[in-house]
Structure formats: C-alpha cells, structure tokens
Amino acid sequence: EPVRIPPAPVDGESIVDSTGALEFSEVPKRLGVIGAGVIGLELGSVWGRLGAEVVLLEALDDFLPMMDVQIARETQKIFRKQGLDIRLGARVTGTELKKGKVEVTYDTAEGSHTETFDKLIVSVGRRPRSEELLASDCGVTLDERGFIYVNEFCATEAPHVYAVGDVVRGPMLAHKGSEEGVMVVERIAGKPAQLNYDCIPSVIYTHPEVAAVGKTEQELKADGVEYKAGVFPFAA
Image 1 (cartoon, helix red, strand yellow):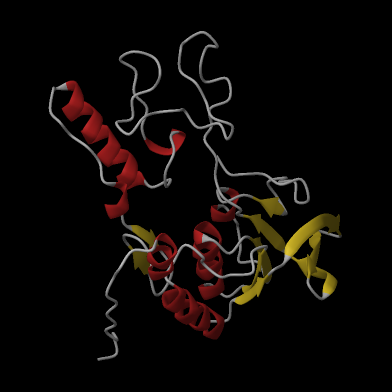
Image 2 (cartoon, rainbow, N blue to C red):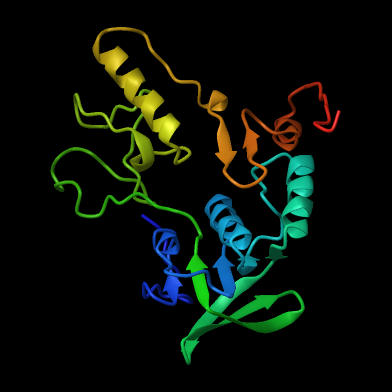
C-alpha cells in the first residue's frame, strides 16, 4: 500500500495517493507531486503530457540515486525539457486546503517556500500491507518495517510456509515476485532452485523509459570491485 506522511494527509480529493492519481476526472492545471522516485516520475510525466503543469518535490539531494549517475543526469535533463519542474532537496513540512486548492509548504537549503496546486499526489514509496495479516502465534515473523522475514529461499520461520513478492524484502516488482514464486515451487518439488537478485531488471515507465539491471558503477566502486565500463550512444 502507498506510504502516508503526516505533512500531507491523503483525503482522496485534493490530496491523493498513487491510486487516486489515476482517477482524476479532468487534467489539473497545476499538479504537485511529493516524491520524484519511480512512481512520482511515472505519474508526473503522464499528467504532464496531458497538459498539466507539474512540480515534483523530492526530499533527496540526488535525482534517481538508484540509477547510474550518467543515466540519472541525462534523464533529468530530458524530463526538464519536457516541462517537469523537478526540485531536489525539497522536504515538505505541511499542507493546507484553501478554496479548493492545496497550499504546500516545503523547506530547502535556501529556506521555506510555499506553492499552490489544484491537486497534490503523495508518492513517497510503498510498504507491505501486513498489519493484522497474521495470527500472533503462527510462527511467521515481521521485521521492523513490516516485511515478512524470509531466508534466501523465501522460507519463513514457520515450517513449510513461504512468502514471496511485495510482502518480503527486496524490490517491489511484479516479475521479482513471479520469479520468487517459481523458485519456491521448484524447491518444494525437490529441485535446487535459487534466485539471483542482482539479475532482476527494473524499469521506470516514463517517456523515454529508463531501465537498469545489476549494480551501478558507483556501487561497484564502493564495493571495491574491478570492472570495465562501456558507453554506446543511442543517437549513433
């Protein structure tokens, strides 16, 4: 389920989550998006192409830190050329409804700022919906973030009980959950199946799409792993 934040309580009308952002009856003239991650960019770029003036407020100082630095830099340039107003280091501190519009207050290194939007999307990530899911004595345990604890083979601490997908650790991706399910079935059938999480691709469905698989160059540097880097321009 979408993560909620106290400064921007979702009301389903003026302030919405990622689900509500798909149910607008008309294109908002001015749209605010809290969070410039995968979901925020996808929703912001869609409504931007439909004619909305889109402002994305991202608390982090870096744009798409999970991506290769060069890809993130070029992607940011493209999105800004498309009209997306991406503001980094912008931490939202409060919202207020005024005459059918949403007034958003946020802080940056330069101080406090206020913007007014017709609609506001809160897209700061998702979390597992595990509350009240399990009986306290079932033997399945949750970690501090609400994910079901599993080992590398998706086995829980309860005998013969497995968990896969968004309710366990790792990226919240449909194909990741599917592969985990296949691995579990194969292991139940007695096969030595194992999943290599480093080979799971991720895609941001914007225009253009942004995709990656494996470790980034900065991650390899941090891990002290020797590597060779190659670059090929699509323009060629």
